[in-house]
Length: 277
Image 1 (cartoon, rainbow, N blue to C red):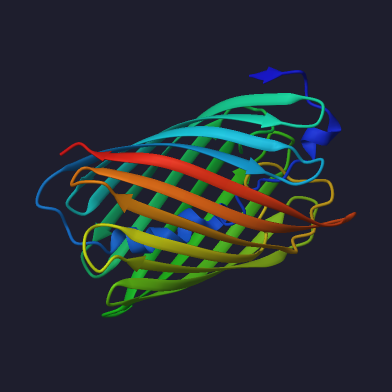
Image 2 (cartoon, helix red, strand yellow):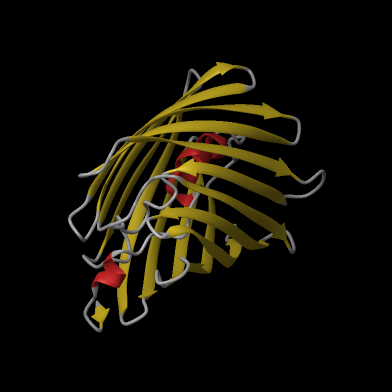
């Protein structure tokens, strides 16, 4: 879907969700290390987010609904998303959907498989495939290897290979991930991501923090002046209100290296999660 056919300004848009390129991949190990529930658990999560990409790069507003079912060592998360990309002179809209499969096997091995599709507009990647495998190295340490391929509406493909470590301690975990990023018709680069996750001393609340450097802007489209020297910080808070209801809030800052100089972008998100049983 689109409103006012895109101009070159829209085609140059970067994703302001800096850390989210690798966030889901590095966080997968932590998600799979939780204890096995006694029976199927279901939850639904709805969220809205706005990303300001800085001067002349527009704003992406999106709404996402996720449905999660967890049963033993298997977890399925299905989502639908709608987005509106507002440039200086035009607006593009698109919808998409995705599904992520988590599987925990015997022998301290777990996997994460992600498939996402979207309309062929410069809002989301029109096809995004990712596969992770995580191994337990020691009682409190895991290693994750991953591969990802994203196909963008403007004809750009990006390939990712990654490796990371995560260490678990009382009350949380810390992880690092390096990604080899190969954007079509651009130089290969290495991106870095550090994640810290802290659980509340009591209850189900938690706070997560991400620091990124490198390809922090490859979630939507490849910009004409993409250089890969981007930096970002992103924080997310999960705040329980009662036994079945959580509120999530997030905020991020990103610094983009562009031909005209550095530019700053922001991300603000708010969501609600309901445990269905």
